[in-house]
Image (cartoon, rainbow, N blue to C red):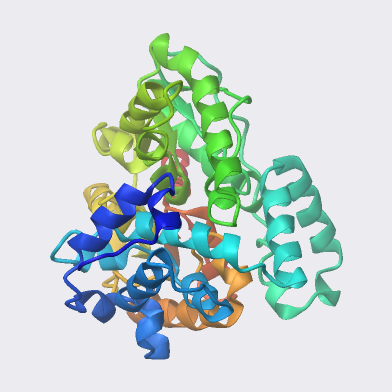
Length: 406
């Protein structure tokens, strides 16, 4: 694809990257075949190829409009198109560049600005977020359906995390919303790792991975959070921690991008690259360990939802299914497993109608094998799917932890 950037666009910090990505696109349209929003809406501008053209036009000097912003907002950033693309177009980075330019040129309505600011504020404070969830549980009957569905189902409390007692150690990202929405996830992960002789180092200084800010009109703030996390983790990595483990694949996908996003920061480029290299999803760690020696799988029908951030961003599709099958769990067939559930970070709140359609379609596929339980690897997908009130949805590590207890 030929480009003619405007003089203003040539001066953007990531202008060369944007031009390189645009030139790699041969506008074949294969991406539309697997794009969830194109499948729902049938509009060329709501598919990757159309959004690429919109970004190209803006970078070439055509004015950005509210319509341009809407079509870019509707993208889930699921990266299914990247898995499909025969030319290897780095779509998600082009989208980030384009969104930043469009959002600077097109002021959002007051309601949208307030929603995005509120989401960023709550996500940055786990304690504030948990307090809001407790308040929401009290007033659940009075809340609108779309909000009450976001409140997690009550879950039984698990025992405290094991103490730091093994020679092998890892760090674990606590996350910003997971402690409130799914408090047993990281505890379960720590318990399983402990049984394998691996201790989780507490690291309270590390906070939100930065993805929510970065994808809600605050890219600089998101990168500042990345820098703070690198500073918090670095001493532990130097002292022998094997990896930075994530139990939320959405966070993991963003942390694995630290090296790219900070490659031009002289103070952080080298550290960010090493942090990205040592960031591992939990399934990558446990997949190499002798779990068979400590697990006793139940004969329970399980459907696995593989989040987009695990299969398309981290290229780990099928890894959870392989691990659970290895442990003896009874997995059902799930058609169209490459499609997005509609959670996509805060997408289910900023684009609720589309998110509900995608959620219901995904649940229909997940439930086609009549499972007793659905498991996933990302807290956003877990909360979004479980909010429909249908088949219960949990993180897969809770299933493994339960098999330890039994």
